[in-house]
Length: 291
Length: 322
Image (tube, rainbow over all chains, first blue to last red; front, side, top):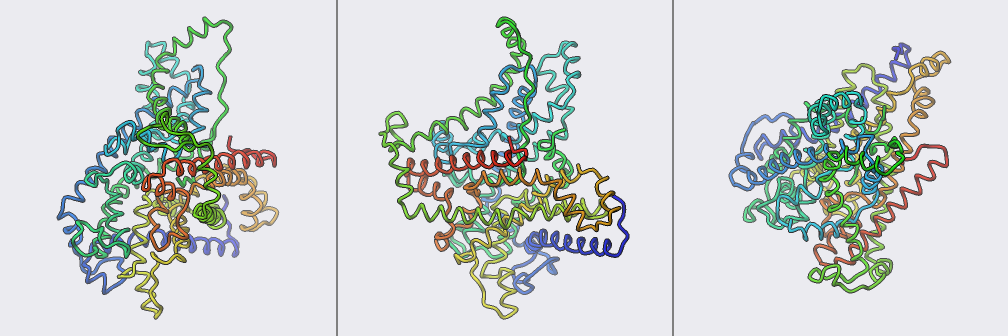
């Protein structure tokens, strides 16, 4: 677009910029407040109210939350579920997406319809719970992965991406004696890295954020992932139910401790986000904006 | 779940060539046997975790007893459905659900559109990227994290919002336990988490607009605001309508997690929605059949809404979702 150099044009740009800057600030300030608060002492936080850069640095809160096994165990569960779940989901999603992306596959319209239909209509919480229970998955880590192993949304995005790969490449690989698995793993997947990165990020974030499956399917609190623990420490202890603290005996955790747990539960997302940010914006559009 | 991104457009599938004889079809099926093998895990997943629960919906016509299973439980016809509409509890949660849905449509829905228009008017790619990066971020935080952040900010003992109120001489407010604050907190959290992410699809369709149109309108003396109004907005009309359809389709689907996290004994009156009620009545109180009936009702309403709105949008000359 050509620069608009009139006075009204500049005014428009300036006002727009300032408003957006304010919006961006409102978006990040709460989080910065929480991060800064977690790195200071509770006395300092109480005195200064709003902290953006702590005057007194302290790891007190982190020392406290890592003084028991509870957080370590929950982090371990979340990391394990995220790694295994993402790999597993990507694997079966890619297999299905590739199969359905091939134009010469008979019956693919039926398969596609059956997938799309699950996005419009579903059995709901109780029947799904009963299926999970019948399969004997209650209280198993598999219950955090299997019931949501494929996202229809992600599968269709990946399928659309595969469809845009020139068919000639697959044809020539076939002539060279490659079978369908070979084509998928040696040709299609390497050509689809941006899409793979995007979908992997979507899956990984979903698994890291797993909360609902955990409260539905896990009765044993020793198996809780970090998000459920976070709820116990922050949400339930925020003036509602004071018994639900770290080990049930100490008084409700103070602000710095709650903030530290929030930071720990968010950290992995903050670490991968800058690297994958440019991919997902592109990747999320792949699905919706064809061509 | 509250997905603000439009689902991938379902493109019409190119038809495989029709073959004359069945032996040729057989040959083709055999040639593609590995492709069918690849589909097995995915198809199994959809059968077990998506279609079996749909079959499980029949327990809403039974008095389901876990030990007798679907085959052994007694059939009771529409009993649980008729209970729905006579139970004052249900009418209350239906009203709560519809009110939150209305807030989503009236308050939340326009915000990503406005934000996308603003981002698009930003000169200089650096700042555009920078702002986008910042406003997308909250979408990746779980509801637990979002709710936790807001709770430490509004809590009575030392939350920044209440400290500020006290500093300026106002009385502290117990945001978490006052029914009156539930809805504002709910919608503010939705906006904080999703508004930025919701701009992605609008920005993508704005990017596809022919720059010549702006050129021409400038020749005609249109200012920036007029260009937004007469070119950008009409150009993304289709996308707006598509996303609107999807939003309508999720009428009773506000997301279990978010509301469940905000729900407590003090605000139950306004905060209990269909999803949380299904959880409490079904899994906590063991009323499997009744709460399945509620869930069934919800799924059917959703399906009908999507199909209706889709049809209407096709009638008025828009594309529709499928």
